[in-house]
Length: 457
Image (cartoon, rainbow, N blue to C red; front, side):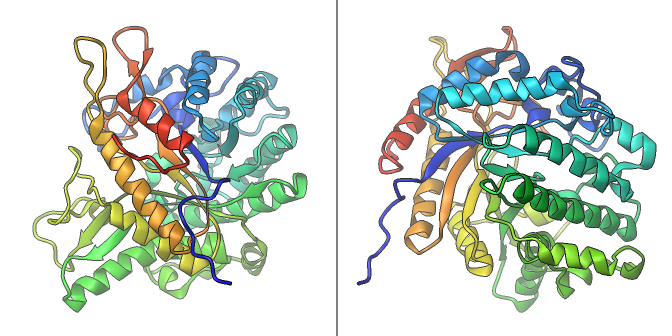
């Protein structure tokens, strides 16, 4: 007997996400070492990207109990946070792990357990230990795999049974767009870029094997940060260019994470690289043997691609190419809920793995009214429209684990500083980082309570 899907199943997990480098703060406390996130100075970034303030972030390090209490009140079923490598190994390769850092994350997990919130842990989000960059140039050297996997072994062993979902890297495919931000080293040519990407891929594969070996009940999945790329017109040249972008940024990396192979079209994107000097037969065997449990995907926007765009284009053109049929945020991010549905169905039909959405949200300059309220109805509309399209994808047969918005609480945007806010909880930068609820807080609380049935404002 056939039965049509209707709405989200009763086990669907609702929640939100944060990243340590943007949120945690406490950069020099608890014997933490310096990461590349603590010493960033990237001239190409916008003027309001105040990396010095990343050292404080939203001070979650001192306020995690207060923050998690808010998440419990909203009714989160799941919450993604990242662990900072330099809290566990301050230099990246210390003889022994830092017990103060392990205790901090254990205390965080205890607080989540108090509110019955299931953790999702990302193990690397643009915060390589500075010491490893100095010692051997970080991701450019194969030694990074040994040091990274030891870090993974340490935390998975310590928190066995307390973390079900592990994500080795955050949006590692975007190394192709900004290796300096992600790895602390700006690739000088395609050979260096592929070398770093290959070391990320091997480390991912080893992390998947490590998690499964230490905690067979846990699940692990790669993370793709991506857009839905449309051709601007039906001109085959535009279609071809859009296809190339999806192959380069989406399918190429995803084929490694979810199929364990380098696709020919992906390798052809690296010009004049002698792959035999970088990739061994053992490397390919390792990649092929890996079996992830799920896909962790992020989505914010679609992009309308022209084969010959007019004017000078930024390196982010592939991600931010404007679509004349869609509205955009202040920062030029196309708002396209249908693109979300298309993206979900595209990746599910291609790879056949259940999907956990790790990030989806709208950045805006939220304003506090005279009475202290924060009306972010625009964020509610963005999320409601995307959730509605996600429900359509589920009813079309896409298997999903859950949906995590970006972000749970206000934090520093990677490129636009603190003015670009995403959270349900406002952080008052001018008044001791005081927390207060936005209108979206109560709305998402209702969405979770009704399992996505009530999306009304």
